[in-house]
Amino acid sequence: MRKRAISISILILSILFYLCFPSYGEEGEVFSLSLEECVLKALKNNLRVAVESYNPEIADIAVTQAREFFLPRIDLDFSRQETKNPPYWWIQGADTIASERDDYGVTLNQQIPTGGSFSLSLTSYRTDTNEAFRLINPLYSSTLSFGFTQPILKNFGFRVSRKEIIIASNNRDISRNQLKSTLFETIYSVQEAYWNLVYSIENFKVKQQSLQLARDLLAKNKKEVEVGKLAPIEVLNAQAVVASREADILQAESLIKSNEDLLKTIINLSEEKGLELAKIVPVDKPEFIEREISLEEALKEALAKRPDLEMTKFDIETKQLNLSVARNQMLPELNLQVSYWSPGLSGDRLLYLDDNFLSGEVIGTEKGSATDSLKDALGLLYNNWTIGLTLSLPLSSFTTRAALARSKVELSQSLTRLKDLEQQISLEVRNAVRDIETNAKTVQAYRLAREFATERLQAEEKKLNVGLTTNYFVLQYQEELARQRSMELKAIVDYSLAWARLEKAMGTSLEKRNIKLSEFH
Image (tube, rainbow, N blue to C red):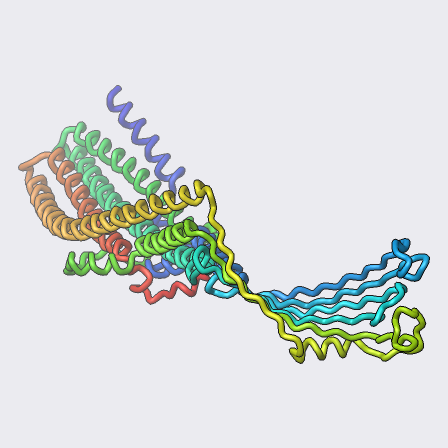
């Protein structure tokens, strides 16, 4: 029964291995990629990068929109009015008083960076009426005027007036650093997925070699059983090991496909037509090249180049601006107002009999025009001006005080966040440097262990050939050699990933590849 159960198990595993999971090494459509090619494809095709790349453009538009506040504005006005009223005084001289009035105006308004504003306007109007005893009818009037208002306390200053522009600019810098951070994360994700795929493929090969050793031993045992040198149980033991290693092959191949799918997703290979179902074959192999790294230099570079640190600093600038504006809003309003105007007047002058308008008899007119009134206004014939100060003292400022208190708390929070982030960056760099040093020693240790395991297996196989040991120990040493090979390979991959983590922690992922942030927005 025991032999039959083992045989059935071997048969089932073999069917699964050869039919359900075809070998990764079989011929098919393949796509060879190096690590740097995968990085470039991810930066080009990754959807998360694509989404994040819109934010700097949106932020640029927000800055432009904020600057529009200081663009000049021109207002054009026109109105026409006709009125008809019954007379309310005998001197009006008509049964129905009819009047017409046309108003025209153009005004230039401009905000200035000190918080003030000025306006320059030219207005005109024309009136015409049938009312008696008018000296000029129709009447044309024009006025050139200039107005200036400047806050002296509240709302005064470049930072207050340009608050929205400064905040929008800071947000733009934050969005650019956020994009850079996303690029760093994407590059590391590619490196991690690529090296894990390489490891799973190489580990698959190690499993294949281990399986082949078990098969060779099985074939050898069968021959020796046939000639009576071994007991039949040794064949069953070897068959059980073969079945177990075939199961290991299935798991190793499944891991390859999972890692390959992950890498395909990160680099968004489906964007390239015809490559959706292609099999990725990594070109680069894990190599152990020991390099020196200075912790002090790594920390210094990280604090100078990390995008999340830059984002926090820009956020602090915004919070400091909000605090400055909140303090300004606590001041009373004191506004300086200056105005100047130059009027002009013209029209048809009515000539009365004996120059007596009380006679009511018009004997002629002296023509006038709207142009004449404009000339007088623009010629500054009549100068008028006013200057004044307006002081406003609010009796309650609960909202303003709350805004000031909130700004102080938010600034303190951002400063604390900066210190916390600096500690986290320091920890990341230290951990990455420590991992590099540890993994370098681990690679050397596993390499030595693998060499010893190889020598031990070779020695045990020689002993088996002369009958000084058993298959049990040979199979055990084969397992140990396969494990040491896998561990050495994993240590080399971990060493490469430790360098990738340090690269990300230092903020040099783009600089190392000579990639400009401007290429992504």
